[in-house]
Length: 232
Image 1 (cartoon, rainbow, N blue to C red):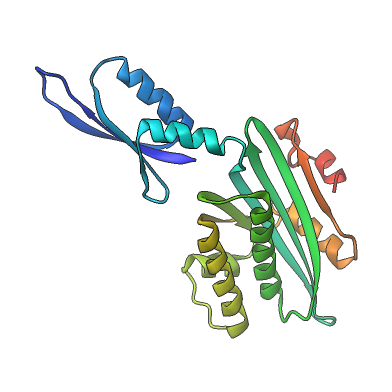
Image 2 (cartoon, rainbow, N blue to C red):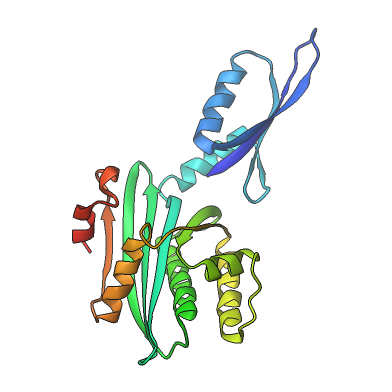
């Protein structure tokens, strides 16, 4: 959870001033607030989150206690593959998140019938990612969505128009789901090489191999290593 700190510097004999921080991890913001309080000059501190909700220090501490075991720092990789002659799609999703002090990787894929294009397969993969996030209990936070489909990411962000009726239906479903889950999406286009994990999952779905796993990551340096690929 990220917040912005607002506080007033004030003493009885010196001028006062208002200060605003950059975006901070909520836990770090509380540590900074505690340190500033020791000076005796910190007044009227408040914290504002991504949804423009304002919290007092006491409220923020209580909130962090409540959400401590919920998924945080969520990054999603998605990809869709399409076989035009069979109108069959394979979609792959890899979700990385932190829960407490532990880090996890959730992988899944699905084979779909009767889709019309590769772009629709990419939209379906994005929507499937939201379903998996909902199952994990992800809500009320910013999440980073990474994929190699410029069409999907730029249309979802509003940078490109969406003129196809079929894709517009997927776009509407996705926006409704994001609103329901109170997710603020951050769209990050990446290369196919960077998206090879989700691509591999989509390919396996087309080949009829179903994958679903949720594993704790012991060594994050192996996240994209060859060894991690063997665990698919």
